[in-house]
Image (cartoon, rainbow, N blue to C red; front, side, top):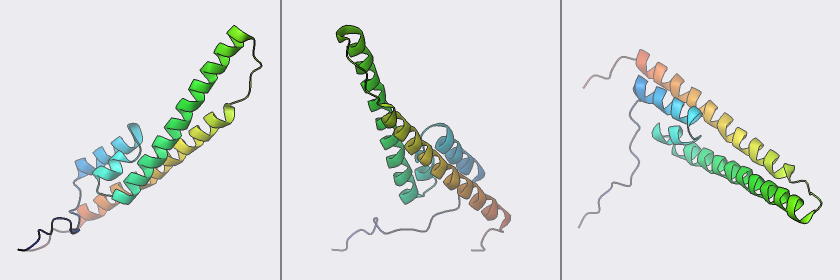
Length: 123
C-alpha cells in the first residue's frame, strides 16, 4: 500500500498582488507573523509569532505587577518596587518581532513585484 506524500514540500506558487498586500498588512497592522504564515514563510512566521507573543506576555505581566503594586501601596502602605524592566523588555521584544515582520513583508512585496514582471511559463 502506497503512502500518501501530502507531507512533502511543494514549490510555492507565486503570490498575487492582493495576497502579498494582505499578508503585509496583516503582518504590520494585526499580529507579526500571521502575514508571513499567510505568504508561505513558515519559519519566519512562526518565529515572529513566538517573539511577538513573548513580548505581549511580558507586557501583560508588567501591567499586572504594576496594578498589584499600586493596590498594595494604597491598601497596605507598602513600598513600591520597580517593575519597569519587565515592561521595557516586553516592549523591546514586541518591537523586534514587528521589525522582523516588516523585513519579511518588504521581502514578500518585492518578490511579488519580481514575479509580476516575469512572463508566465509556457505549458
